[in-house]
Image (cartoon, rainbow, N blue to C red; front, side, top):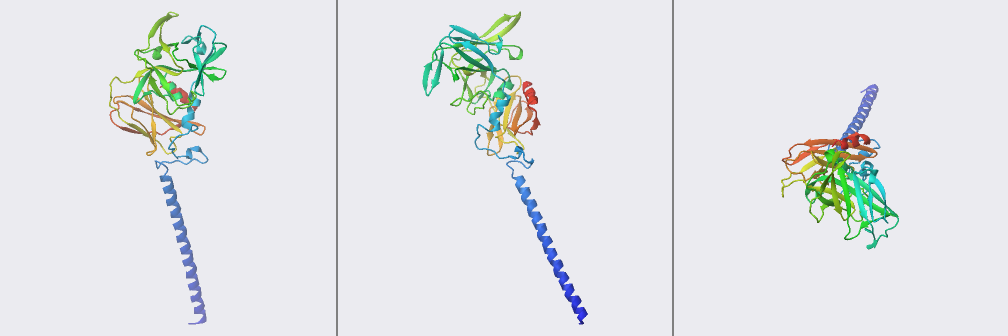
Length: 372
């Protein structure tokens, strides 16, 4: 072999070695790309429940983690502060033998207090309030299904739904201290409603059972439920002619403040057959941000769904078979509200729904609730 041929052979071997190294580098590069792709796919596919996770840069929608227990500061508990109606107020003279207050300044609600019926409770000690000076009365009126959703005080007694006739939150304060009604004393409420909210017969007095200490009216209370009064007589309905119009009023004689309603159990059956309704969402909507309600058609009945951490879904076992209702979700993520709804007709079997909330302005959400 000549020197020239030997040089060519060495060059050819060198070239083949360079090409082989380049091939190995490309192989390693493609392996890395495949590993990254597989890792990304697995990461997205494991987002809590669904493979439909949408990523939003620097956005709280990216939080897909469910909580085993909720905090008072979670959006699901604080959204009521933004949705609930404003309180109606009035002042009363504690020195008067009897005083009628009209919160909101109209005759559709009258609350009549007698002298000397208030007490305070501090550190377990009950103290009578001196009948002098003035006290402030604050009232939230619950007229419609929308109001039950806004304040998140659903219609539930034990494992049964109730039908609401009308409801109130009443708070009386003096010098910043909340007052109660003393044992053995009562006061009166005359609650007048018209049209679709007109009083219905066979309603009972019910009170709200709350956490201790009791939270504000515009904060969600996880322990809240309605409880019938020990007096199970129906609330009288009085018809009066006011300005030439027949108007009906509930006439309560009552012995406590805060959450009060005229309501009755929704079904006359002692043990109605019920079917579970479950709802799931895209993973951007979690139990920390989302409330789910069932709103029964043709009556003021609202059930709130419980969350199921293990399945990352919401459910209720309260709905009797044969019921027509809408399932409504309201979410608050960051500064934005999201909403969706679906209807169920003549419930007869366990049902699973998927809701896909869309962003909605708060004023539009309020309009939607008013139309329920």
